[in-house]
Image (cartoon, rainbow, N blue to C red; front, side):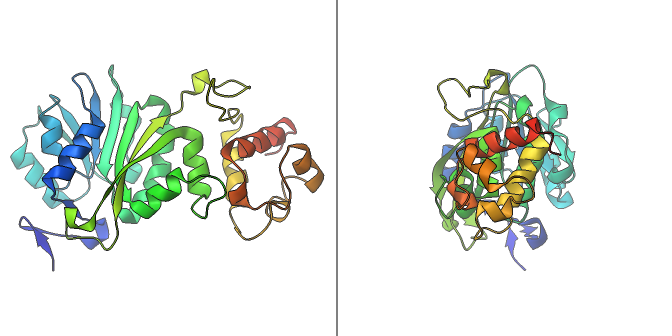
Amino acid sequence: MKEHQGHVVRKRFGQNFLVSPGIIHKIVDAIGPRAGDTVVEIGPGLGAITEPLLERIDHLHVVEIDRDLIARLRERFPPERLTIHEGDALKFDFGALKGQGPLKIVGNLPYNISSPLLFHLVPFAPLVYDMHFMLQKEVVDRMVAAPGSKDFGRLSVMLQYHYHMERMFVVPPGAFNPAPKVDSAIVRMIPVDFSKVMRSGIPGDGAGDMARDPALFARVVTAAFSQRRKMLRNTLREFISETDLTALGITPTARAEDIPVAAYVRLANSLADLGAH
């Protein structure tokens, strides 16, 4: 049974504790917390990032599921400095914390729930100023992947539609205790301001239209990537004909990873105009 600072590491919570002072400093600098910000940390653990964040801001919110860690955090930080939200981040209403200042969400996300958690956060994106997460490098590579690459998938399309994303830097296994078997990476996610997205696209960005039916857009993307080796004319057969795909400038023999986010939005909007549900 592995321990760190007297805490028994719980595998079911995907716990790997950050211990490198240099990496911790680099992460907090990337987050750049300022007075007036509402900062929420997911999975504070033993407070490796919590403490340096509180050196820069007066108050911090944290979401933690492990009761032993919650008890230790309560002993260490007074409630006027640290508000602890006990429970599962996958069920937490992050929008409820939005105040007057920018809402920033940060965290060393457990690898075992990283993708579901990223999807859970999407509905809150309009309220969020930015997010900084540490994830498995492989997941970050998929998040920021370009069309045509093997890493480009459903996660890439759905997140790139909602966020401008940047892989900041790689974190080696030795920065953690216990050390994971893989590299990690820090990703910065800045929500797209859809109030500035017009039918001609985001000014100066070329990212394309806004999806008029987000649920339909999500279903189209899911269907396209349901069988990656198949051509779009097959995976999207229930939605659209080859002729209509071609008319939209989408090659019917292309595979899901070959077309950019803007093409998926264009396709979904065309279907929405036709009354598809």
